Length: 446
Image (cartoon, helix red, strand yellow):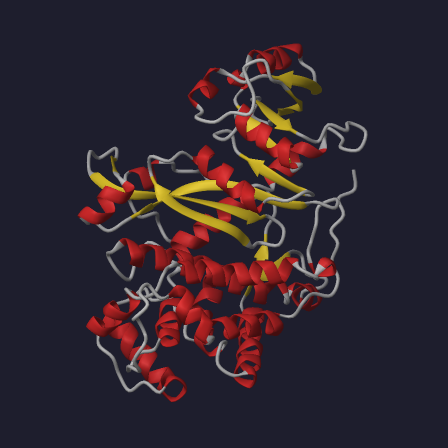
């Protein structure tokens, strides 16, 4: 099967950033996202918009240093002479974390609306993935009560939150992000992400997700999926693997696990049709995939191995979130601060994606004839966004100059994409909370 990517002119980043600027500096926004009706009712040194911009400025160092940096660079724009750590802490308490989630939604909605020629598709589908991870939190009683704690392999209690994202694997946007207690399973969060999934979407899941309920909900709303599943998923899947067939359309039924569901629209006799696909790996192991793409003529069995492999993009996103955006370097200890920092990081990631997406054709032309294809160095790109992300949202002229400057810096620092590279995965490094070795080309940019 020929894989087609539809690429043409795109809605410009300037237009989308102007929409965001209007939201940040809008009086209605203050009323929507302030915690109390009396908050920001008097003119103070630090305004609602300046506090929001400060939180977007990738604060990973000492708060005192970050404040001095911010005030020194932006006092002429924000009419700020100085403010203290205490003042900042008091003002951030007055802002709902939802503003950062909704600012990110502005980028996503604008990108996917009236921009058909700018959105890259796989055979007419938006190619998405759901995946989860964990964030280690500051050691406070409040966060322990909200998110829970676990004991790692070193028998040390750590406080962690579960994070889950719905990610566009081709366009590289975070469509939805969730932060939840560790006790809430990935499957439950995947069902919440379905609110943002539409027809002509394919969602890819790893083998921790498959369930009759998730499959049922996909088919109910008319969206497609590709799931890696354990061979022991059901008797039907066991028999399929034993048969040696490469693919088969079968009916599956609710399993014992579904008895615990509080609300069900089906009983134990319900069934849904899915397609099973066998994938033989080079190491000799057999991988089982379950999909809603039933048309064997239209979707050849051979495409599914490569299609599932595209899920690696969401794994790469988590590397950026933790090791390049440094989301676990929280700027506060309250749950409100954790939520603000988390959703601000997702917003910054989407800002970076928006700018990079406009450079793809230029980079391809710039490196035409080279041995490898090239891409923007994501680590350095976040370093370049530091401070500049604030000047993006002042005046239209300042915005245009900042975008040009960022594009120049991004194109100047590109790296080759070397195919078929793999690294030995050390699954213990995070469970033991040991810092992974940082290679010399991955030094901190923030």
